[in-house]
Image 1 (cartoon, helix red, strand yellow):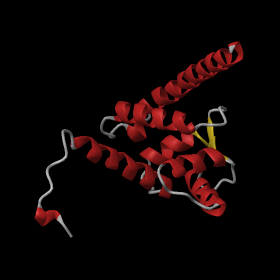
Image 2: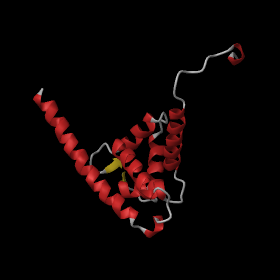
Image 3: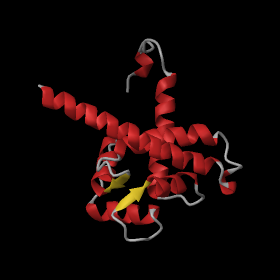
Image 4: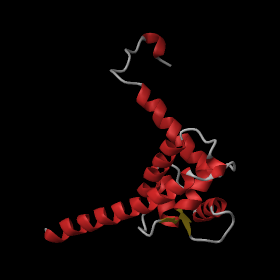
Length: 147
């Protein structure tokens, strides 16, 4: 029993250390002139940080191809290995890297280029906002609702 608690504690420490690192990158982005015009930059960066941490599975502070694969599968968008490699290349600007750093991720999310991954994540975020609006019991169905 003790081993699992320790593992959880170590993981928690790792995540808080990682979050500190990402926070310092966020702070650097807040002072970058190219993003000075960006609306709600601080809250966007916070949202991007949470999303990034969710999928940084190699715990090196980067999203590897498996992290990307799981991210997309979680959104119901399974991709082939080739599609994943193409998406990663798009995010890291064609560099043949096997991981997406947080810096690359932010540049993608805040940049003008519409990378496929950015579009997927933006679309997924919009979908969530729509879902939350419908609160309360579902409306009653009538005969006119039948196909």
